View (cartoon, rainbow, N blue to C red):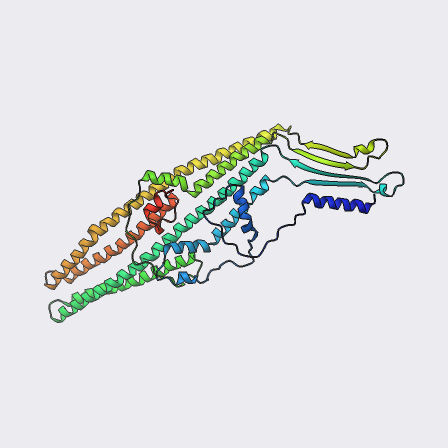
Amino acid sequence: MSLVRIAQLCALIIVVMSGCRSAPTTTVSNAPPLPASADPVGAEAAEALQPAIANVSFEEPLPVAGDALNSDFDSQHELSLPRLIEEVQTRNPSLQAMVAAWQAAAQRYPQAISLDDPMFMAMAAPASFDSPDVEAGYVLQGSQKFPWFGKRAARGRIARAETNAAYHDLEDSRLRLAEATQLAYFDYYLAHRQQELNRENLEVIRQFRKTAQSRYQANQVTQQDVLQAEVELAELERRMIELERMNRLAAARVNTLLRQQPFAPLPPPPAQLSSPSEEPDIETLQQLALSQRPDLAALGARVRAEQAAVTLACKEYYPDVEVFGRYDSFWQPADTQSDLRGQVGVNLNVPIYRGKLHASVREALSKLSQQRAEYEQRELDIRYEVAAAYEQVRESHRTLQLYAERLVPTAEQNVAAARSNYDVNKSSFLDLAIAQRQLIDLREKREEALATYHSRRAELMRAVGDSRANARSAEEVLMPAPQ
């Protein structure tokens, strides 16, 4: 057999053993992020991700700061919180990076459970090809390694658990980003609402000044009343400057979350936030948090990964098997030696270095203990977070009730009484100004308390593990869905 024929035979065997598969090409597109509800557990989910992963490319630029809002958002008559959260999460580059990390982790499973590539070996004696005394000498060998039973399954469980952990890390980031968006939204609402109250108060003080000027011209009061009215009016104008600054900063915070220029125009917030609602008991909220907090679920997935790692370390005590087939033409056809050219055999490693194997098992067990301890600590932390946030929400709820039922109504009555007394010269303008000033302050604090209540409720829902609390009612969020 000529050297050229041997080379052709070797090339043919290589092509056959590789399965004639070509490397997949990556198309250029921006694949949308996978649904947040998809839980990437198991081989089926890993396979389902492959079409999306194959189309991922970074050739097309991602949205950059300064991009305009899309038309359906920009044309809204008021800023919608659910729409704002969705837009922020879509534009956030950190979430995009974590989606890519999760997608990458999902591709580890088919790699982890796969067999090693088959091996092909070719060897020849070049001088034998032109020798008149012997036939051409060459050896062809193909082999496949098979790990011990259970090793591939353990590697697969590790990969699936790590994919699960990456998914829940992504969901935890979504949750925290939604909380930050809600806090910025309520600050934006508060700044707008306080500006509106300040404009209303300016109109009232202007009426008071007009009344004081009329009474002064009629020699019923002194010039001090007019001057006091000017002082109150100037103070409200100073307050308006402060509120304008607060409003611009609140809008800049929202725009930054949207990856826009800080002072890009935004739709106004709603005219009024919803009234407080009753929350379930603390034990219900804590149990709900333990069942749906993504950071706890991520730690649980890492515990399962370490459990599989312990199993894999224990499996290393058993050898891996390599099966091979061989054709050896060095056996010359004298007598019956030609029958010895075709051969099969087995290679296997001998795990005799027990110190290394014992250390590997101890390392895996220590990591498992570490992850279990972190999981238990996170459970305790979650219970405390929910309890602390729950008490803050209760405090805000009771404070709002106090403003609505006693403080603001009493202050309004006090202003009405002070104005009546001033009209009949039973009190001074200073008494009227003080009463109005108290009412202004209490109205602003009531709006601040309402915004604080919703901010604390957003923190509570994040502690519970649900970022959609302000887009749905408390019953929808906190009660189980019908089956």
